[in-house]
Image 1 (cartoon, helix red, strand yellow):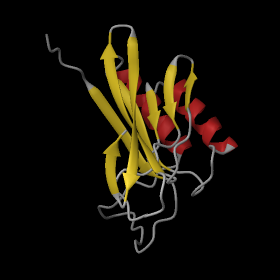
Image 2 (cartoon, one colour; image 1 turned 135 degrees about the horizontal axis):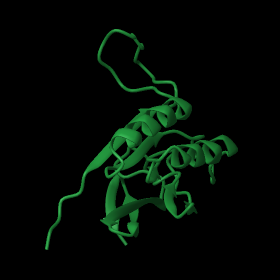
Image 3 (tube, one colour; image 1 turned 120 degrees about the horizontal axis):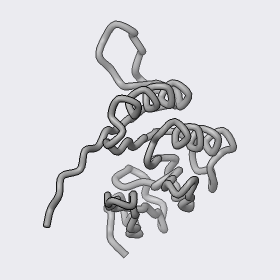
Length: 152
């Protein structure tokens, strides 16, 4: 039986953008820093406690094998503010999964579709399941072959 789930996504690019000028009074890519997002998430969750909140952050040091200390601190702060999971698409390599207060943190899911052609590129596809007891995650490893995602 399918049940509806209410979900709020808080997404931001925390890295400097190439070929994009930030203009505060025009539509563009969100560039809020994690501390700003934590404030917004905390306020949102006060008003909407039954809605799941997921932070999606474009962040991290390119090709670094693990998250930085500031990423760990930020992810914990987001969860402390009421976020239910943290997902990080870049920095082009997969980082291991972490749990903080029972909440899922994926600092980097690697590439999915990208123009890198190095052999052995990996990505991680994560299915989040929303239940009464919280969120469970199912991981699917993806190999990138000549810019094409291939399930392993």
